[in-house]
Length: 231
Image (cartoon, rainbow, N blue to C red; front, side):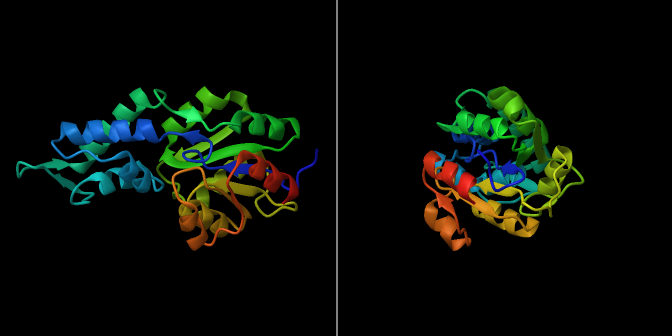
């Protein structure tokens, strides 16, 4: 079966993998260590999407990204708190994380059709590569996460880097397509000059996607199959 796209670039969290429980566990373990109140699962769901630094900044009571003000009146370096989170998340990131139902079969169908596939995420690069390899193996040959020197989404840089590694031109005909679950992903596709397919089963509600300008929103795996096949 032919597809109308030259490549498929996927977001990771909320699109391919349900990572929320592990993200919430690492967030709350870090907050508790420093004496901060923990957050609900729903709060963490709304905090994710712009990288782990922004996640922890939003999780702090005062939202301060330079110095974390501790409940006892002292302060802690935000960099130390962030490093603590990354260490905790690396240790638990496969505890309850799972692919959304139907995702492995979809990726296999794209591979069998000769469609190059990559993951682009605002999660830190080591975790993106580890999770992609653990859950999808060679179904996703290229995984790009947050790292120094490359702007995060919604800047298009990581998308262009993934396409470069796949050997697919960003401005070719047919075009690559970007698939994600958030307003950040809608803006990323727009900034990359690519069509976007949004999915509603992730970390943002359908209303958020509509308000962000999403034009194609898939509420089921069957709908995503059709959107990828039909353009």
